[in-house]
Length: 92
Image 1 (spheres, helix red, strand yellow):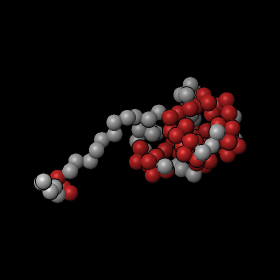
Image 2: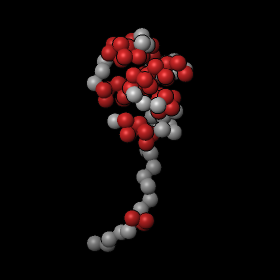
Image 3: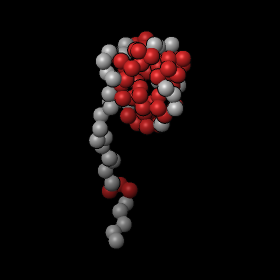
């Protein structure tokens, strides 16, 4: 069996791209919250949470900040999941 040095490995690339809605749902589920519970933590209505999770409405700065505060993460993690994949994994 050949032993490889650490500099011989290439970092893995992401195979899936998450949408903002998928990130919101994933963070909510990681907390063990329902949409109604997220409403209580964020001040965003359950209807809007559902629309956001299903990518039916744009997030906007205010909502991103409300959700980020509820999840205790930086708003960029929610608004720009394609650039913040590592931070999303750390939040899990």
